[in-house]
Length: 202
Image: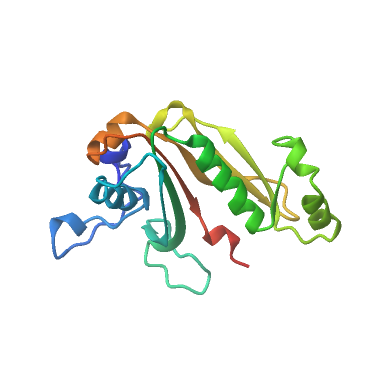
């Protein structure tokens, strides 16, 4: 589910494998919240979707990337807090998911980069944050192909912390590929957004 169900290859350097799992289903620790969210949606696929279904989860994934903080023991992996937001309905609703990305950034005091969205960057609320140096940083959304999503309907979220010079990719979203929907026995379109929340720890 971590890889094949999402049209991804296991590079052998991302997922942590348990030596003695209770069941084979839990042998590989999740590296993404997306499979669990899609399984939840599948269990509730009898719900009326004409007005759209919205799901979200905040939880940890485990990645083989070494310790998260300097004071942690190096056990070869780390927990990373993620957020996932899903919309399903008569259409994939990528614009709804994109709107959620913008709203979450607003709530975290991350302002839009002027090159990404000049109108939003010039809004009074953004100008106040910039004037008072109260913003966390800037963000951009850039189109980027991802095999989990329908071709031409996916993007990445990049954030640059206040005082830093480079943007870092912290999330991605898009309309789920039909084969991914089929893998989870879903017969209606959906879009999903996942991001790393650890990036915002101070």
